[in-house]
Length: 146
Image 1 (spheres, helix red, strand yellow):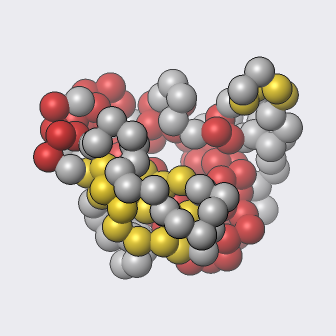
Image 2 (cartoon, helix red, strand yellow):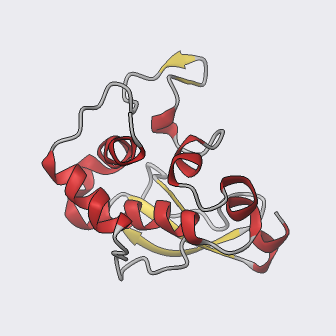
Image 3 (cartoon, helix red, strand yellow):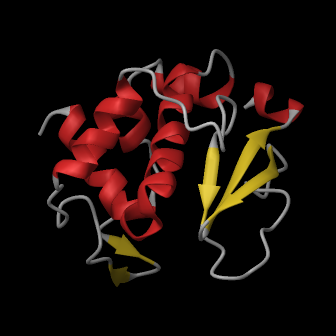
């Protein structure tokens, strides 16, 4: 499977129920990780989309097991539809969802009306905005040292 298809599968798996804005926001975060010029994502992923998606413990949808239980909603079980490819292509070609911007490096669904701050919990990100069910986070100065 090429990186484009893997990306389309990830978009479907992570944000299918979030509408076009939610899918574009998630795709923007993934591509922000590809393009970030410092910190963990630059060091580990080196600007490579596949490396970003496959990085250990980053996306629940990339895991086949979660908390010791089978995860049936994963990229291997999700067949992308045309809209997921369209969003992937849009992001790969430089599209940035303005609601998230070019800095956000994380998102999460808190399954709660409140977005936790900080996230990740090591203090490298701070809450920026919420789009539908996902909370989005920009890096703090601590991220540069990861």
